Length: 268
Image (cartoon, rainbow, N blue to C red; front, side, top):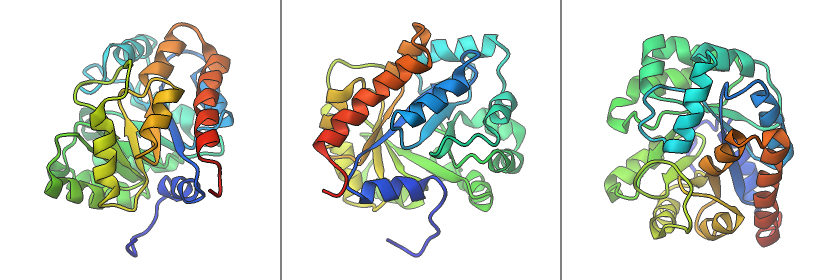
């Protein structure tokens, strides 16, 4: 590992990874309903190692129909970037929170202003899936100055040389996209998810988490044979859209937590 500063998202994720356990980062759409903050608390208590909170956007290019439906519901309730950030401000659930949204929203507010706003709300990281590394210098500089870990994504088709550069630039963790296409539940693990995790592990000491298509505990275990952890989005959001609430969300994440801990106990 280099002498670079380890940020507020990476530090706890790295500590869990180094203890021998695997990581779970569930995704929740901010402003989805009146009790979405209760869901965040419940996920942390169920064993999540960080929470990814989506700031709804009207044109979410990476998101499949389930998360798009959640974004529409949140937007129809009047959810805005600032309302999500305000509700997260000062929230202490014992694990770091990262926001996920799209460049248009961040750029509209201004990179400096948004980075400072996230920092003031005690948010640890940010994920902008539509901001390529070649265009990310300004945002990453502002995020770094505000001590926000700017997570970078790598796709199954990312060439080796570019993959190295993305991994070197990423903060917090490396988000390995498990398969081409939008987010959504899948009936089986794509072989590309295992391949991209393995490729990342060869070039970085950052925690490597696979997202997109992680739908249940069995799939999480399979992916974690190569990855340090998983990001779980659509499968959780579907349950929330169906009315599962905080308790149902916690039950789902607890299943994954238990399966991973049985396979990889701490200290082994």
